Picture 1 (tube, rainbow, N blue to C red):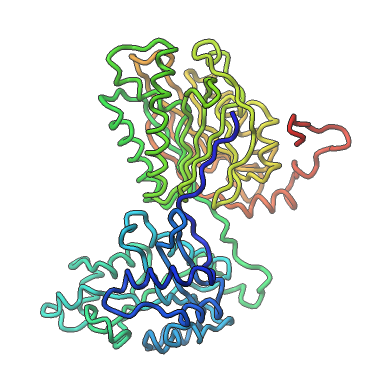
Picture 2 (picture 1 turned 180 degrees about the horizontal axis):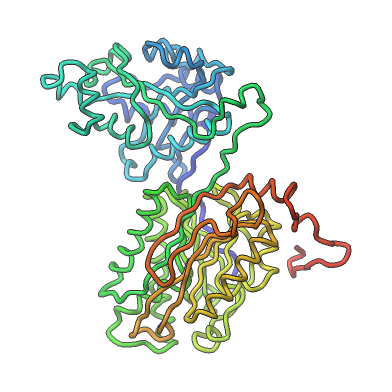
Length: 516
């Protein structure tokens, strides 16, 4: 089957002059009681600091906009109004030597507020802050609940303190605090037109955790923002009464991973076999594959929406299904948080898969482009073939995901040992996710054995034993780890061993049928 790929539904990028009309229309929709942005204002922002203005597009429509500028610390933390510090919104006081990123504005289409558009914009600001090695992000936030609580809290400082202590829930200030921003102080007359906030603003601050003051005199050695958080789910096979029960269980773990700030959440191989447990009788292999194939469109749509809603990339384990060419394949779906869906087939079915399910091996072996760089997918048995991982790494993958499903300890150890070998020989990270438990009414899912893990190369920057995190054996749980991509670059060029660089291309190489 040819690679399956759908275009992204959600895109976050820097704003362009061609976006100006759409941004004006968005501001008119969001700020109903105020005049919308003018073309000159947005042109000023783009001209002053092109890299600091972001849009979110949903299926090509601008649904979010964030404007920023750089300011010196002294200006950021002294008393100021929005008009004074932003140059009337034009970002004309942008200072390229500033050490703080200042938020001018964020606006989100109210029709898309369940898609975490605002979070995506704040994440874009954080990435920019990391890339520029700035001290952090500051801005004057609204507290529109103040007018309603003014009798109880005549002073805005008292109202802010009540928000801090969770005595009141302000629709904006509380959101900013929950998003990781620290309220520093009240800014009087920050934005007089904001009647709901009494004209006041709250100076919000987020400190860049990668900023090192000791590097101020050494601008060459910038902090590394290239950290990817992965969450692997060791999921228990469970009998369900209806398909919704399966999707509720999956969404629970997606929510957990998103709450941990994960960039990726990984599910096990063939975890969709649980959908067969709600059938009135045990299905024969042919009927089981047919039933699973009927679930495929719903499975793809539901997990794609989870990825969008929770703003996380989902490695959707694998799913046995009939593909467009009529073959039965074990397909791994990757659901990206921009709404795109990528399918990768298992290249090497096990003898059991071939004999019992009539599963055939797939053809394409290619990476998936994500917002964290290219990644590779190897489904269980594929991890036991070194050529697969090497090709994916040569294509740029620095993280390889391995959903697996094994019934015995020795089967599990084959996968584990091979994944750890792949991490060493390719100087990359390998993330595994397996199933536990059993389903008595689903054939070929009788018993499960798993201990999921996140494996690293073995060198100084990494965990001593090459294990960043792992689960307990045969217990439903998750494991979480932060993977530093820059550490891989160091290991490949300066490590104790340099497996990728030290290959003897004069003696051997792998030649693929597509010419790779």
